[in-house]
Image 1: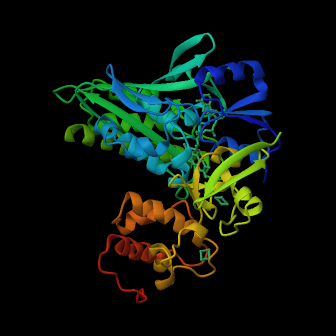
Image 2: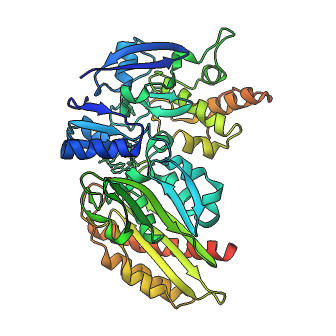
Image 3: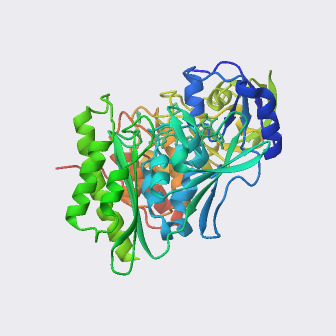
Length: 290
Length: 168
Ligand SMILES: Cc1cc2nc3c(=O)[nH]c(=O)nc-3n(C[C@H](O)[C@H](O)[C@H](O)COP(=O)(O)OP(=O)(O)OC[C@H]3O[C@@H](n4cnc5c(N)ncnc54)[C@H](O)[C@@H]3O)c2cc1C
Ligand code: FES
Ligand code: FES
């Protein structure tokens, strides 16, 4: 399978890329890791006339902790968050999620920015970013803006990244005090997209009372979904079994899975209930280990 | 419009004109004429097309040839030296790590990066490490054994037994 013909440019600066993107309008598409886009182009689901490759632009790939934030450059590869000891201190969730994204070869190329910008509810990083309350920096010719993750996912393959814009950075607040997070998804086989996946991030005070809860769900809604009622069911509690069961129950009720090759609706709701419970417990355990 | 690219494959430099839509695997097989890199699924799933780009394992059916400009590529044709086969090749040969051999080039290139990052992996780490490579023949046990053998050889440790393991 070969994509239909297109023109290709690999600019060496972000400004150059933005100018090109502006001049070419919606005939052009950004190429990051290419591991969502190229398969779609081979199937001719996408037929851009021009690809603007970000891979030769220096300074878009980094992981750094600065001003109370973990900052992830858009072109940072999945494998880098998987292997970073610095990231693992506060966010063991990145090793959880990366290990479940496709396989090592795909993770060597797929980028964090691309995983979000693709706007696919089947991708795993969006749920993690919801749980961690991330925000996303987007650059255009007129400057940069920051969008909260709750305002980022518009619909199927559609995000806050507008024509002429490039996602440049992901920002995640470093939790203060006791915290833990975890991700798991049920997959039919290693490397498959999620039948259902759950990301959980918890923060607690000295007494072990939950002060903040973030829960994101993968592939059980047209867009990545925040489990709002589940989060509320945990905050203010000591994360006792009753609170955890209610949170899990709410997540299974509030998601909107569709019936497909990966399973029917009831099965998927059941998965979400079970995995939510498991991930809350795992995040809690990690919080008390710190 | 064709683009001129220069890249190194197994140490040798090539300059060629390619259409931007040419996939790297087609470039290697058809334009360069090295057919050791295989195409299995053509949908990024099987790993038969795995090569190394600047030392990183990659599925060459999901990368454009133009993206490889300026890079160093390693294919199965480039892993043996004048001294003999690569330890991973020896591992596969000694442990019957292949039947039809179709998955083998990709499997070995993937294993080379795996062992570089993790010289003494556990069986579980190996199985996760080759989770992007499908084999329809061996059932994987002998592939895992082959990689354990190659790891020992690369570390200079005592080589594990190559006797077949019978499962009760
Ligand atoms: C076999 C296989 C299995 C996979 N399984 C999983 C899985 O289980 N879970 C999972 O999460 N993912 C999975 N993926 C997808 C993979 O993680 C992709 O790499 C990722 O979704 C997209 O990242 P990319 O860098 O490859 O983006 P690309 O494919 O380059 O781009 C994707 C889209 O985002 C746009 N884009 C990319 N970067 C930017 C940017 N900085 N600014 C603006 N727009 C941008 C592109 O224009 C394009 O429309 C799988 C992929 C394969 C091939
Ligand atoms: S041919 Fe590339 S992954 Fe199967
Ligand atoms: S040996 Fe035949 S596919 Fe692996």
